[in-house]
Length: 238
Image (spheres, rainbow, N blue to C red):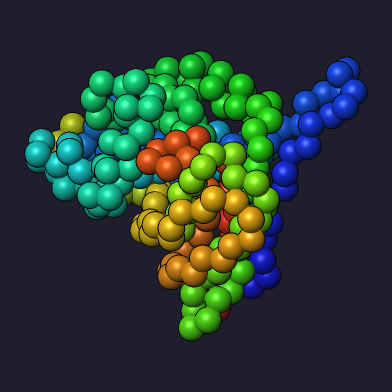
């Protein structure tokens, strides 16, 4: 598998030149027990068709008390959403909850607000590091960073996700009897460490049969400054 590097947007000297669009990460916090989440899941798949937009979905477990245990949920995904709340001035956990590049958010039932947030972030021009993901020793991935850190410290994450659509038959709760569509569901996430600028390499494990994305963002749920991703290994899918 060859390394992939994130293209960096460069400001134009010509004031009349159009702004380049930068890669944007859209995250959805969703649940199989949430009646509004099936439509939000479908919309997430639509957003992924936009140029320079990449999406991930995290299943949360706090709906499980209503009769159905979410088959994708893990405690760390709830913690990721919880970490975002103070920065986004969101008073409580809820679903469906869209977070755009860690800097803005919108409820999943407000498509226009989500689309506006994505559009505004696409034309933002924050400083971005160069990120490369390549094969490491013993089946690991190596994430290499270089450039200036936009903040004093940034967090580096390695996330495995199941690419594309999947269907789960829900047998209880608000979505009882529904064959519920899911898109780019996160399967695991690993904190690799913090980065403060300059060349650095991090090593982490990921499941080769899934897609993998390295995310660099401000510490403790701060803005996303870049990501790089690799497709599932051909060897692992045979």
